[in-house]
Amino acid sequence: MSELNLILLGPPGAGKGTQAARLRKDFDLAYIATGDLLRSHVADETELGREAAAYMDAGKLVPDPLVIAMILDKVEEEGDDGFLLDGFPRNDAQADALGEELDQLGRRLTAALLVEAPDDIVIERLSGRRTCANGHVQHVTFDPPKVDGMCDLCGRPLKQRKDDQPDVVQKRLETYHEQTESLIDYYDEKGLLRRFDGTRSPTEVHDHIRATLATLRLEERL
Ligand code: AMP
Image 1 (cartoon, rainbow, N blue to C red):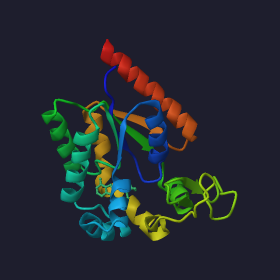
Image 2: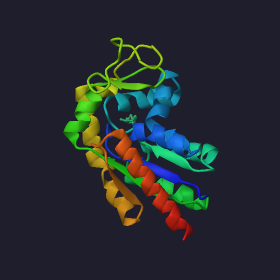
Image 3: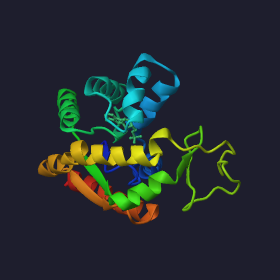
Image 4: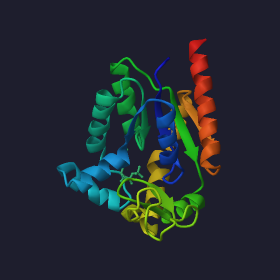
Protein backbone atom coordinates (compact mmCIF):
# COMPACT_ATOMS: atom_id res chain seq x y z
CA MET A 1 0.00 0.00 0.00
CA SER A 2 1.25 3.51 -0.75
CA GLU A 3 2.53 5.56 2.19
CA LEU A 4 0.39 8.37 3.59
CA ASN A 5 2.22 11.64 4.16
CA LEU A 6 -0.31 13.99 5.69
CA ILE A 7 -0.49 17.39 7.28
CA LEU A 8 -3.34 18.71 9.40
CA LEU A 9 -4.27 22.36 8.92
CA GLY A 10 -6.79 24.55 10.68
CA PRO A 11 -7.17 26.99 13.55
CA PRO A 12 -6.33 26.01 17.12
CA GLY A 13 -9.34 24.23 18.62
CA ALA A 14 -10.74 22.96 15.31
CA GLY A 15 -10.23 19.37 16.46
CA LYS A 16 -6.95 18.50 14.74
CA GLY A 17 -5.57 16.68 17.79
CA THR A 18 -8.77 14.65 18.18
CA GLN A 19 -8.68 13.61 14.53
CA ALA A 20 -4.97 12.87 14.74
CA ALA A 21 -5.54 10.43 17.62
CA ARG A 22 -8.12 8.55 15.51
CA LEU A 23 -6.07 8.56 12.32
CA ARG A 24 -3.08 7.14 14.16
CA LYS A 25 -5.23 4.19 15.17
CA ASP A 26 -6.48 3.69 11.61
CA PHE A 27 -3.14 3.92 9.87
CA ASP A 28 0.29 3.18 11.22
CA LEU A 29 1.63 6.71 10.91
CA ALA A 30 4.36 8.58 12.75
CA TYR A 31 2.50 11.36 14.55
CA ILE A 32 4.55 14.52 14.85
CA ALA A 33 2.80 17.27 16.83
CA THR A 34 4.85 20.43 16.98
CA GLY A 35 3.01 21.90 19.98
CA ASP A 36 3.44 18.67 22.02
CA LEU A 37 7.15 18.50 21.15
CA LEU A 38 7.65 22.13 22.12
CA ARG A 39 5.72 21.68 25.38
CA SER A 40 7.92 18.72 26.33
CA HIS A 41 11.01 20.85 25.64
CA VAL A 42 9.55 23.54 27.92
CA ALA A 43 8.78 20.97 30.65
CA ASP A 44 12.30 19.51 30.38
CA GLU A 45 13.79 23.00 30.44
CA THR A 46 15.98 22.35 27.41
CA GLU A 47 17.65 25.29 25.67
CA LEU A 48 15.03 25.11 22.92
CA GLY A 49 12.27 24.98 25.54
CA ARG A 50 13.61 28.06 27.29
CA GLU A 51 13.73 29.97 24.00
CA ALA A 52 10.30 28.79 22.87
CA ALA A 53 8.34 29.38 26.11
CA ALA A 54 7.95 33.14 25.85
CA TYR A 55 6.59 32.91 22.30
CA MET A 56 4.17 30.15 23.25
CA ASP A 57 2.89 31.98 26.32
CA ALA A 58 2.23 35.03 24.15
CA GLY A 59 0.39 33.03 21.46
CA LYS A 60 3.06 33.82 18.87
CA LEU A 61 4.91 31.46 16.55
CA VAL A 62 8.26 30.14 17.76
CA PRO A 63 10.93 31.35 15.27
CA ASP A 64 11.26 29.21 12.14
CA PRO A 65 14.90 28.09 12.57
CA LEU A 66 14.06 26.43 15.91
CA VAL A 67 10.94 24.67 14.69
CA ILE A 68 11.95 23.67 11.17
CA ALA A 69 15.08 21.77 12.24
CA MET A 70 13.19 19.99 15.03
CA ILE A 71 10.38 18.81 12.75
CA LEU A 72 12.40 17.87 9.67
CA ASP A 73 14.71 15.74 11.84
CA LYS A 74 11.66 13.93 13.19
CA VAL A 75 10.25 13.33 9.69
CA GLU A 76 13.58 11.81 8.65
CA GLU A 77 13.96 9.74 11.84
CA GLU A 78 10.41 8.43 12.21
CA GLY A 79 8.42 9.12 9.06
CA ASP A 80 9.73 6.51 6.62
CA ASP A 81 6.43 4.64 6.43
CA GLY A 82 4.27 7.74 6.38
CA PHE A 83 3.61 10.62 8.75
CA LEU A 84 0.94 12.86 10.15
CA LEU A 85 2.09 16.39 10.93
CA ASP A 86 -0.02 18.40 13.37
CA GLY A 87 0.84 22.09 13.83
CA PHE A 88 3.48 22.19 11.10
CA PRO A 89 3.82 23.95 8.74
CA ARG A 90 2.35 27.15 10.15
CA ASN A 91 3.60 29.64 7.57
CA ASP A 92 4.87 29.70 3.98
CA ALA A 93 8.56 29.44 4.94
CA GLN A 94 7.89 26.26 6.93
CA ALA A 95 5.82 24.84 4.07
CA ASP A 96 8.64 25.58 1.61
CA ALA A 97 11.18 23.91 3.93
CA LEU A 98 9.00 20.80 4.22
CA GLY A 99 8.51 20.67 0.43
CA GLU A 100 12.26 20.91 -0.19
CA GLU A 101 13.02 18.22 2.38
CA LEU A 102 10.49 15.82 0.84
CA ASP A 103 11.84 16.53 -2.67
CA GLN A 104 15.32 15.65 -1.45
CA LEU A 105 14.03 12.42 0.04
CA GLY A 106 12.18 11.62 -3.21
CA ARG A 107 8.85 11.73 -1.40
CA ARG A 108 5.74 13.87 -1.58
CA LEU A 109 2.74 14.92 0.45
CA THR A 110 -0.43 12.89 0.01
CA ALA A 111 -2.78 15.61 1.24
CA ALA A 112 -3.23 18.65 3.46
CA LEU A 113 -6.29 17.99 5.63
CA LEU A 114 -7.96 21.26 6.60
CA VAL A 115 -10.29 21.08 9.60
CA GLU A 116 -12.24 24.34 9.63
CA ALA A 117 -14.16 26.04 12.45
CA PRO A 118 -15.18 29.68 13.00
CA ASP A 119 -13.54 31.82 15.68
CA ASP A 120 -16.50 31.85 18.11
CA ILE A 121 -16.63 28.04 18.25
CA VAL A 122 -12.88 27.74 18.63
CA ILE A 123 -12.86 30.25 21.52
CA GLU A 124 -15.62 28.36 23.32
CA ARG A 125 -13.81 25.04 22.88
CA LEU A 126 -10.36 26.23 23.91
CA SER A 127 -11.42 28.25 26.93
CA GLY A 128 -13.15 25.18 28.44
CA ARG A 129 -10.45 22.67 27.47
CA ARG A 130 -8.63 20.89 30.29
CA THR A 131 -5.69 18.50 29.93
CA CYS A 132 -4.05 16.02 32.32
CA ALA A 133 -0.35 15.19 32.52
CA ASN A 134 -0.95 12.18 30.25
CA GLY A 135 -2.32 14.43 27.51
CA HIS A 136 -5.97 13.32 27.85
CA VAL A 137 -8.35 16.13 26.99
CA GLN A 138 -11.76 16.98 28.46
CA HIS A 139 -14.05 20.02 28.28
CA VAL A 140 -15.77 21.64 31.27
CA THR A 141 -19.12 21.84 29.40
CA PHE A 142 -19.00 19.41 26.47
CA ASP A 143 -17.21 16.53 28.24
CA PRO A 144 -17.22 17.38 31.96
CA PRO A 145 -15.12 15.18 34.25
CA LYS A 146 -17.07 12.81 36.53
CA VAL A 147 -14.98 13.96 39.49
CA ASP A 148 -14.47 17.70 39.40
CA GLY A 149 -10.98 18.61 38.15
CA MET A 150 -9.85 14.99 37.64
CA CYS A 151 -9.27 13.13 34.38
CA ASP A 152 -11.93 10.44 33.70
CA LEU A 153 -9.36 8.19 32.03
CA CYS A 154 -6.43 8.23 34.45
CA GLY A 155 -7.60 10.16 37.53
CA ARG A 156 -4.82 12.73 37.31
CA PRO A 157 -5.58 16.42 37.85
CA LEU A 158 -6.91 18.32 34.85
CA LYS A 159 -5.32 21.68 34.17
CA GLN A 160 -5.87 24.51 31.76
CA ARG A 161 -3.05 25.01 29.27
CA LYS A 162 -1.45 28.39 29.90
CA ASP A 163 -2.11 29.35 26.30
CA ASP A 164 -5.81 28.34 26.49
CA GLN A 165 -6.52 31.40 28.64
CA PRO A 166 -8.80 33.87 26.82
CA ASP A 167 -6.28 36.62 26.02
CA VAL A 168 -3.75 34.12 24.64
CA VAL A 169 -6.46 32.25 22.67
CA GLN A 170 -7.35 35.57 21.01
CA LYS A 171 -3.69 36.12 20.10
CA ARG A 172 -3.30 32.55 18.78
CA LEU A 173 -6.29 33.09 16.52
CA GLU A 174 -4.82 36.36 15.23
CA THR A 175 -1.53 34.57 14.57
CA TYR A 176 -3.45 31.85 12.69
CA HIS A 177 -5.29 34.33 10.49
CA GLU A 178 -2.20 36.44 9.81
CA GLN A 179 0.42 33.74 9.24
CA THR A 180 -1.08 30.29 8.81
CA GLU A 181 -4.32 30.76 6.87
CA SER A 182 -2.40 31.53 3.66
CA LEU A 183 -1.39 27.86 3.61
CA ILE A 184 -4.94 27.02 2.55
CA ASP A 185 -4.31 28.66 -0.85
CA TYR A 186 -0.72 27.35 -0.87
CA TYR A 187 -1.85 23.72 -0.75
CA ASP A 188 -5.02 24.30 -2.79
CA GLU A 189 -2.88 25.55 -5.68
CA LYS A 190 -0.86 22.34 -5.47
CA GLY A 191 -4.07 20.28 -5.63
CA LEU A 192 -3.39 18.82 -2.17
CA LEU A 193 -6.06 20.53 -0.05
CA ARG A 194 -8.99 18.57 1.35
CA ARG A 195 -11.57 20.42 3.49
CA PHE A 196 -13.49 19.11 6.51
CA ASP A 197 -16.16 20.78 8.63
CA GLY A 198 -14.75 20.93 12.16
CA THR A 199 -18.10 22.02 13.62
CA ARG A 200 -19.46 18.50 13.01
CA SER A 201 -19.04 15.76 15.61
CA PRO A 202 -15.58 14.16 15.91
CA THR A 203 -17.01 10.91 14.49
CA GLU A 204 -18.52 12.64 11.45
CA VAL A 205 -15.28 14.48 10.71
CA HIS A 206 -13.32 11.26 11.15
CA ASP A 207 -15.62 9.31 8.80
CA HIS A 208 -15.27 12.05 6.19
CA ILE A 209 -11.46 12.07 6.45
CA ARG A 210 -11.27 8.28 6.19
CA ALA A 211 -13.50 8.26 3.12
CA THR A 212 -11.37 10.97 1.52
CA LEU A 213 -8.13 9.09 2.22
CA ALA A 214 -9.60 5.86 0.84
CA THR A 215 -10.53 7.67 -2.38
CA LEU A 216 -7.07 9.23 -2.64
CA ARG A 217 -5.44 5.83 -2.27
CA LEU A 218 -7.70 4.34 -4.94
CA GLU A 219 -6.89 7.19 -7.31
CA GLU A 220 -3.16 6.64 -6.74
CA ARG A 221 -3.50 3.02 -7.81
CA LEU A 222 -5.37 3.80 -11.04
P1 AMP B 1 -0.39 23.96 19.35
O1 AMP B 1 -0.33 22.93 20.43
O2 AMP B 1 -0.24 23.37 17.98
O3 AMP B 1 -1.61 24.86 19.47
O4 AMP B 1 0.90 24.90 19.53
C1 AMP B 1 1.11 25.62 20.74
C2 AMP B 1 2.12 26.74 20.50
O5 AMP B 1 3.38 26.16 20.08
C3 AMP B 1 1.77 27.72 19.39
O6 AMP B 1 0.90 28.75 19.84
C4 AMP B 1 3.16 28.26 19.02
O7 AMP B 1 3.64 29.18 19.99
C5 AMP B 1 4.02 27.01 19.12
N1 AMP B 1 4.06 26.29 17.82
C6 AMP B 1 3.45 25.13 17.51
N2 AMP B 1 3.71 24.77 16.22
C7 AMP B 1 4.50 25.75 15.71
C8 AMP B 1 5.10 25.97 14.44
N3 AMP B 1 4.94 25.12 13.40
N4 AMP B 1 5.86 27.10 14.27
C9 AMP B 1 6.04 27.96 15.29
N5 AMP B 1 5.49 27.83 16.51
C10 AMP B 1 4.73 26.72 16.73
